[in-house]
Length: 407
Image (cartoon, rainbow, N blue to C red; front, side, top):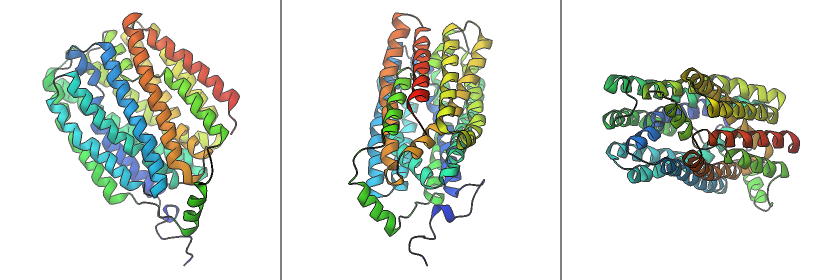
């Protein structure tokens, strides 16, 4: 047998939906995890508001969560390259998030929420970069957009399921109230814990680590002698930082919907619509990027984002908010998977873990500052101000992507 090709090579396994099984099963893990997380954490700003928490503190919680997530993504991505073990880090991260979720049942203050959410995001930070690198390792360059698109579609379909179940629970427990009650939220936590456990089991049983050949081990050793990344990758990170500075926590989109008079059950259904459009557009956008190029698709997504944020700034009626949530999901579907595929395009295989760590780290750390700015703009100026700010930076990032980066 050729020693450079093992029976465990991901590209030689039987395919599911035209792709390596790892992509499908990692998508299933994300589907189950997102089902859980959407039930427990998506409506968190409404729960915090019910606890009497100031908007700037809500922004701080969202921002700190993203910040710690980013730090651990940088470290775990680098570590997965160094030790050559991506699956074990992913299992650790998913397990941490699963263990801490039930404690939200006992949360009665913003301080306890911060600690639990902080811990959950540590788990997400540990798992995300190795998982993305594992997906990139499991597909060819020609199907990279499709692979990440399928993963994001499955991930987001989990959000649809989670929010649909949440809407049913909210309706049964409190009907059409404007505020999220403690009893309702505790039911969401109890039910949401189940798919989180199932996600860890799927990851343990069905996902396979890509085994390195002797040649790739030698390549890995040589890669550690190289310094830095391609200039295009560095420019991409800088442009992502500009965009992310205006892309505050989704907490503010939810708060804006409530600010415009949406009952909590309507907000939940709006999030279902958001995730339906997200899931429906992810795979087509990924496949389109395989044909037309990533930067064109990313720039289109940022244009959609800018238009949606301008819409949130000027909206005055509930029907407008419904349309904006659909547009917001379209932005996510167009950009999220394609951006991850673009990272793999710009860096060598042996540095993918580190690259995803840096990408996720830059985005997450910038989101910390973005959420603080958004909370300050909301409180000091008005609820529309964060959305004008975000739209402006999205336009600037779009111009940077088109003018400064070549594929």
